[in-house]
Length: 184
Image (cartoon, rainbow, N blue to C red; front, side, top):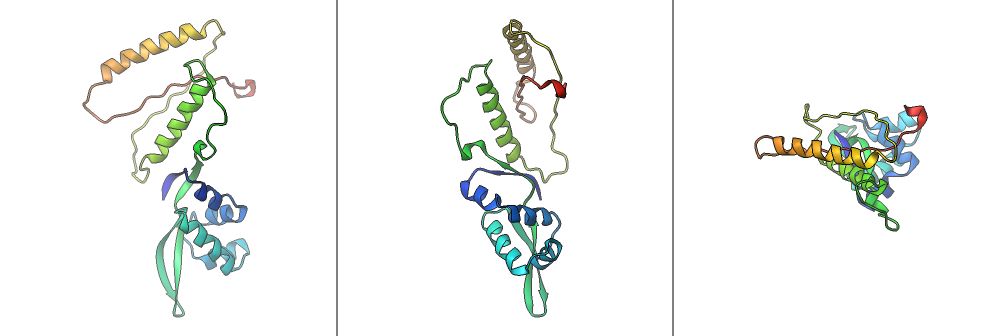
């Protein structure tokens, strides 16, 4: 089971975004037959089977095994991922937005890129090399351009030191955005 399945086709999103299918998908976190899921959710096996087939068509669940019960073959299914992310491109941008380094539009573009990149990583490996760093700073509007310049210079120094072709390639994304007072 993958950690994340990135949904970038409208048909996938439509197949997923039905309350009963989400409930079935959650039940399929553990490999199960339609009958087992139906019993847990107090539904009929036929109804669960119908929804599982729709989820299968769009690669949202997988059949991982099959067993014979009273001369009938019964599929064992599992959710394809632990999380399902909807691509912002399903709707796309409505209108233009500024994308300079100091704009929220640029931050949104970076966030979408990070989401797409992370979803493409094969998370079935046990140890995916990555790191995350967060912190909190306080900037006045007057300080923002100077901070950006200093941050760019610091990062350029790091890019120069670690930008060779030896080793595994990593993408570095640094963002800065306002937080609500209750989060700080």
